[in-house]
Length: 119
Image (cartoon, rainbow, N blue to C red; front, side, top):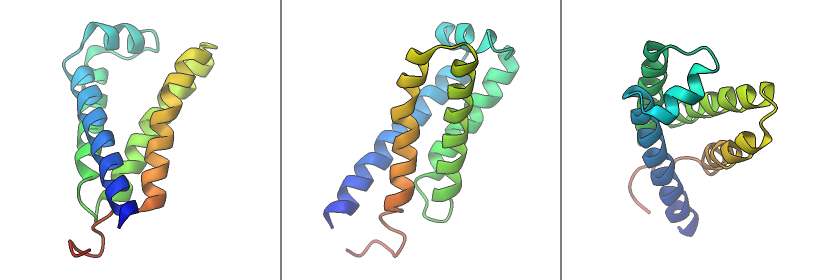
């Protein structure tokens, strides 16, 4: 019961962060454009990445798409971590690691309502 509540909170955090960062990428916020343009992303590429991130975040809500949503979000975060490693930017890597771990933890805990809404 307690784990379901904790995991529900973690899922909501991941959902919020995915939608927030995805929208920042989609809308081409200056910080996102600066970071991704140095890795060769165009404005369109960044927008596509943002849409994929937002879709993956929404997939977290539904038990049938939960694992795929987490997988897509984790893959996107891992991509960013790899780019930071190529740049030898350990600070950037350390900023992204908690978000990667968040996705891995909620996959491990599984969707709190996979067996229905009954506790």
